[in-house]
Image (cartoon, rainbow, N blue to C red; front, top):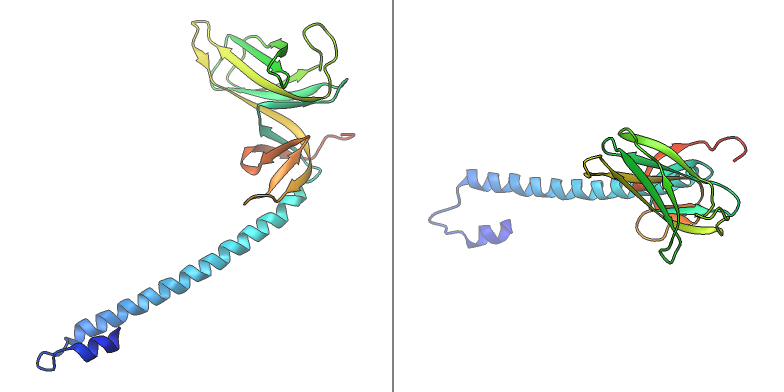
Length: 193
């Protein structure tokens, strides 16, 4: 570009040397920015590779993750947590099968704002054991004046594997595929788990 510019300049009115130096400085800045961009791309790729190599270390760890599904093994209880945005006078958990039929309603009563654990004994409303599988989890909370209270459900499980399908690694937890952004807590599993 500079050589073309020099060839086309008017000999009777040569280019101002200050403008010429300023353009050289701009070209140097552009080149430096391009080099910096390449180095940042390399750094980002290295960081992504390091993250992918670190995720498998979570196998065997117990995680708490936001979910609206609950895994059940017949004859065993299933645990989840509920977080309330504000205090609620009435809190109810509905557990439904894959067809959407409510198999159990858990009356959790009034609760303070914050998180609390809940255990489902794995029984339906008639007291019969539910089959192993995945169940939908819905929690409703309200105040005495009828106003709704925001809820968030979380499930606890042990990481059994890692999936690298897609652009980011995902955890395999009790039949669930869990995004890393959904994990709210990581711990060593309790003894005997």
